[in-house]
Length: 136
Image 1 (cartoon, rainbow, N blue to C red):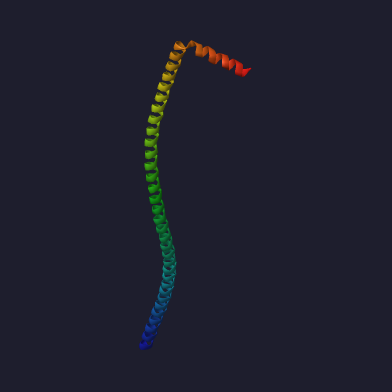
Image 2 (spheres, helix red, strand yellow):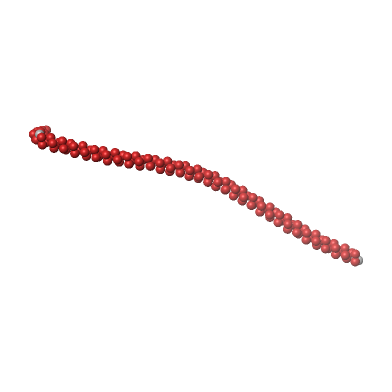
């Protein structure tokens, strides 16, 4: 009887231990499934982030190329503006020289006209007379 009670006690303890082990195993299997789901979700998120990173890297490359093209254009336009500014200054000098020359030539013509009028006053009267007759 003692043996039987001991056997039943051991058997009951073993069954309890087996049930406890079975519950622990089921809990651990559920945790493994949960961890696998989490890992799967994280892998998908990592994949999405990787694609976003690649897209942003491509956009950055394109933006840098565009910036380089724009910088080249600005540099080219700046040089062109500098050349045009020099050309404008040269033309302004030429215009000033031409205006001065025109003034001097006008002054020379006026001087010659006045000299001619003093020397030949009759020519002036005749020119005025011709003008009056032509307008009639």
